[in-house]
Image (cartoon, rainbow, N blue to C red; front, side, top):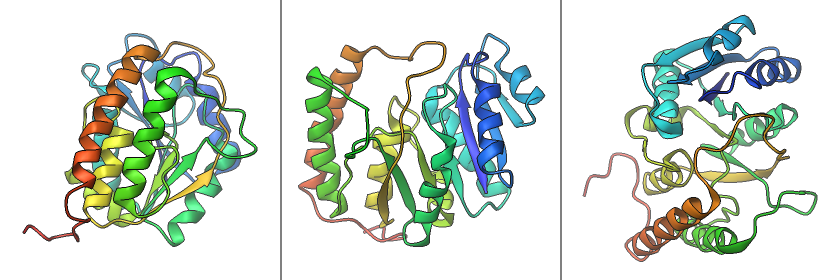
Length: 236
């Protein structure tokens, strides 16, 4: 099993994230995709015992995760989990997202459940609700948290994403789910814990994110009104 951590200027948190993953899943291999960081992220990750792939410049989370899936496919991993480098994801939930692969190709850790303290307000909340509705309709099953970056992928998803994975903003979350659905992959959810980021700052502000989510929702609504998901290999 591989844990993939896309990281951009996360020298303040990366070592702690790796240590917590080791604590909860000592059997896991850990890959840090250093996404063009200008600080000591790569050095801290190496010192913490992770494998590190360094990209020459910042390509965003989608591009970093495309690299991770190529690595996982080349090394023949049968399961991969994406974990953020900023400390927001709780490695204690690793087993939750991994166990779900027994009956799904992708398991998304949802932050929206009765025991969660996670909150989104304003325009971003409504954009996420519309996005959730559109993806759930495409999936024919609930996807309550389409922008969650804490998720796992089984062998069919690794094979697909190694070839076809969106590199644009939120491509690693919304875009990849749409691709998975259109290729007939099974997507489930499981509740997870979300913390405030330990250090650093998000790559996009809330207003920019809300506008993008709204645009993505309109595109997905148009897609969901078309024919249902296609099976892998169906090119017609």
